[in-house]
Length: 91
Image (cartoon, rainbow, N blue to C red; front, side, top):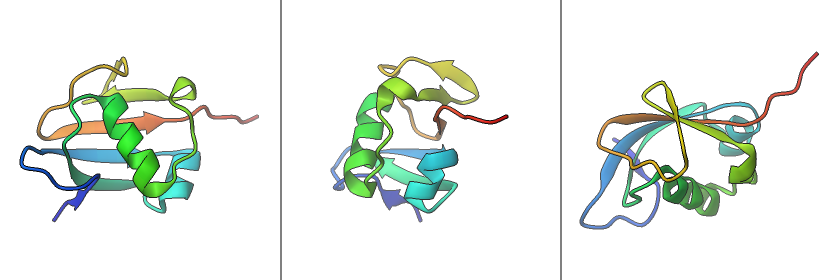
């Protein structure tokens, strides 16, 4: 059963979310299914920041829906697979 990304409302969209790097560490999960009333990925990320204390600023993240990079105002639909990708450092 999916969790609610925010307070449940009458109109929700069910999405799958994957987290990487610092977001995975802060959320304590690498993936989850949730229901949201958000209509864009920016609204969804804002809900997740508030609910789970995610600290990465959206200006420093990339977002993908169904394996395609999208802008933050891209609409979300039922059964979308959403990936939030923070900057990765390494050597």
